[in-house]
Length: 86
View 1 (cartoon, rainbow, N blue to C red):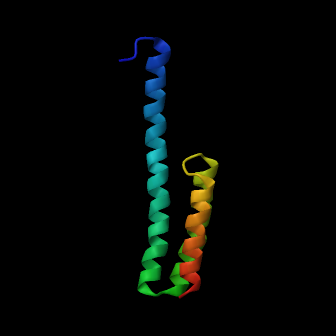
View 2 (view 1 turned 90 degrees about the vertical axis):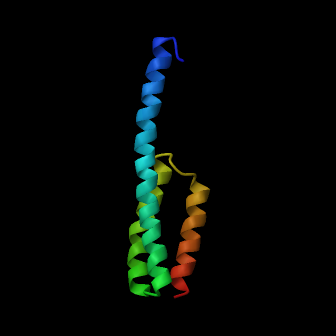
């Protein structure tokens, strides 16, 4: 258990940040899932629209430090490739 006031504050801060970051990751996953569902359904128009909505969310995840930029680049590349193949 944390004994110093700084350590107690750090624990509070870490818990608050973890909540925010969890919500961000959940939001990003939802946007990615929309693209994947549209691809599975074979709806190119919906998949393209969902991809355009997912791109800024993924980029925001990188800028907020929730995801690594190479991870996002890989995901974007794979999603774009799936949508283009429809």
